[in-house]
Image (cartoon, rainbow, N blue to C red):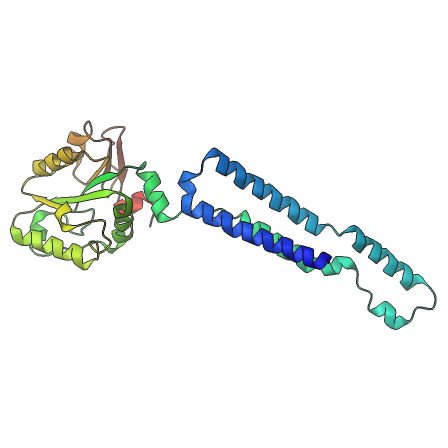
Length: 269
């Protein structure tokens, strides 16, 4: 009966561990005070249950005493003494299993990339981002007249942003062929297949000021750019900006963050 109870308790602990892990991984950012208190209570309950499992029961202790007494009584055969096993040995594997369950529960829950993106963007819902040097390998409009190459390292972060943000990409180009080349590169990279970004949200202009004008009209929560002049111009109009630069530049304003790449800012590399 005691063995069955321990098995049931172990099963219960495992189920609670799985449910709490799911709760943390799916809604880490949405836990309120009551939810955190409930989780803490469950953690304490699991811990004390484990402590109880580690302690031999009263009946086991009595049984052990009887076994010791019988082994010291004259007339008991050597064969009978050989099969006497201390109850502590029986509980060793159970203690180990309980310890494993508790250790598994108390392991830190690593946030997903989606959770990190939402946290870093402070729950912003609209993002504008230039293409050159941020999404594309190329660094100038002249290069786009020859080719357009999407950075493979930025794709995962970009797709996470499109899941919960209204994302607009923009760039200065010198001709219509460059536009087509950029759109084809984005499509080949699978950026339009997630449903969060459509071709109509990829904007092109003929001047840097044109890009600045796009951003001010859209009024995003975040703008990502690699041009320090654009960053400086928009600092007083946009809530947050990310300045992408290979070397850490002087911070233009308190609401401007700096990183060597978009993916680096979100810690995905």
